Image 1: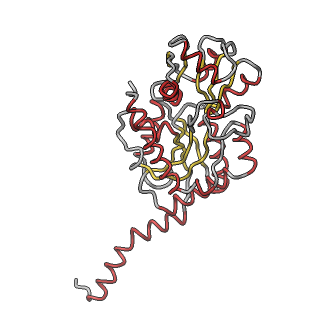
Image 2 (image 1 turned 120 degrees about the vertical axis):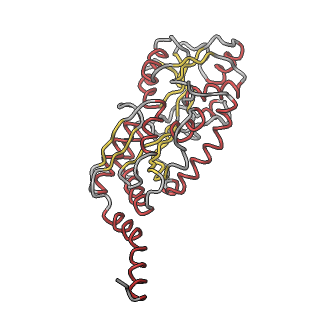
Image 3 (image 1 turned 180 degrees about the vertical axis):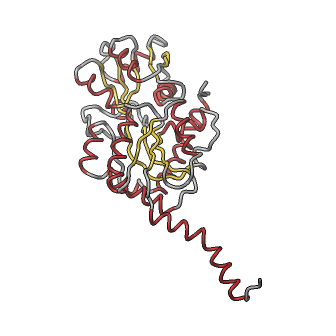
Amino acid sequence: MRFPRRKFLHLAAGAAALPAVSWIARAQTYPSRPITMIVPFAPGGLTDVLGRVLAAGMQTLLVQSVVVENVGGASGSIGTGRVARAAPDGYTVVLGIWNTHVANGVTYTLDYDIVKDFAPIALCAEAPLVLAAKKTLPTPDLQGYIAWLKANPNKASMGTVGVGSPPHLLGILMQKQTGARFTLVPYRGGGPLVQDVVAGQIDMTFINTASALPFVRDGSIKALGLTSLKRIAAAPEIPTMDEAGLRGFSFSLWAALFAPHDNPKDIIDKLNTAAVNTLHDPNVRQKLEAQGFEIPPREQQTPEALGAYQKAEIEKWWPIIQAAGIKAE
């Protein structure tokens, strides 16, 4: 059977347009089923707290369930890898953090690329760490303690939560910046580590403010400084590391939403709008700030801004990690 040329061209054009029409229709009806938000760490941690607050707000705005699934292991790389391999249809996202989308790219041998295999959605929150120390320190402030550490090499210990973790990296950076020497002791988790600082079994650690503040306020540990660039609302009495005397020493444990690469822009935009509007709800903001989180301004929460921020963090931290020879075992 032969078609007239005009009819043939019309049918061919219609067939060529089908994929575009399909994507547009999908974006317009999205979401039509529950969305899975992978939190690549165990329940109960700071990332999990943020993920559950975020999911509750997003599902209200999207009028569809957002289900948090904890997939822990290997500093978040197992759950993150699952999202890298998921279908790019907007129904699987990951709440990644600095570990998963910066450090793991150089400390682990991964079967995915932390940049190329993901579509940035939104920078959600940032959380500085506290340099927390046992209450029986020989000096009351950071400058005095650094002087003591330099005068007493390898007599103090700093706990970390594993190779390549933020406390581990910050301990190495602190040694490099001050010339002090102390032993780095790995722990399996932040809970046992804080308990050993409280008990005086270990001298210091870098830990999130939500875990540290109850012990700081009851006098069980000392807070020597925050890694943020400015003081935070949850603990205005704690100076920054810069204010306390360690100039230029800063770090932010940030969290952000990512989807598999090649998700349609319209779907990414819908997810971004739901996430950002949730985070700027006054009740949500107050709840997260009480946990020590800081919510970025809206202009820093676009997909483009997150992509640029992640790349800048990689450029900043990968040379430091490589120079220290840090590799996960």
